[in-house]
Image (cartoon, rainbow, N blue to C red):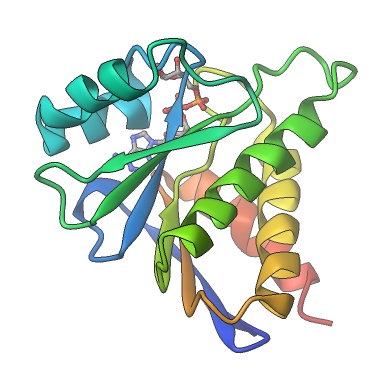
Length: 179
Ligand code: AR6
């Protein structure tokens, strides 16, 4: 599914973010930048040890929730990885939506700073961090769409969704944004 926003596109695909041929991919990291399971584990496995070395050297204090840091792509096809830290879902009353929005915004800002034309996101926070997928999809897609309306830098933002249920949630939300 592809939708035009301003001069750029939002694309939804079912798949694995580690094989995407884009300038940068986002990672769903933790505040310690310590690696882990889920998409974080898959990215470190595919990228090789270089990006963990880079994280430890450049960001020894980690990265606060709602922010992101950049490394090279190691052995990945992409030039950069933006390690974003989404919130752990605690029922919705702990500023989770604002923190999730800020995590996406941090990646979009890094994409502009590093002159990326194409960027891929996973569904940040909806795995181990248990953010409800329908709610997360709204935050993710709205934040990206608003940015694309005013940014000339990005041509394509691709959401790479790992399972059919997550893909369906993002597709439903994106359809509601068409009118
Ligand atoms: N490509 C795209 N999406 C993927 C992939 C992949 N290869 N693998 C999993 N997903 P999660 P979080 C999906 O748990 O909720 C880690 O341990 C997955 O199915 O990876 O932000 C970190 O170190 C789900 O839809 O991230 C943190 O400690 C989505 O990616 C913590 O988990 C996000 O799930 C972060 O939790």
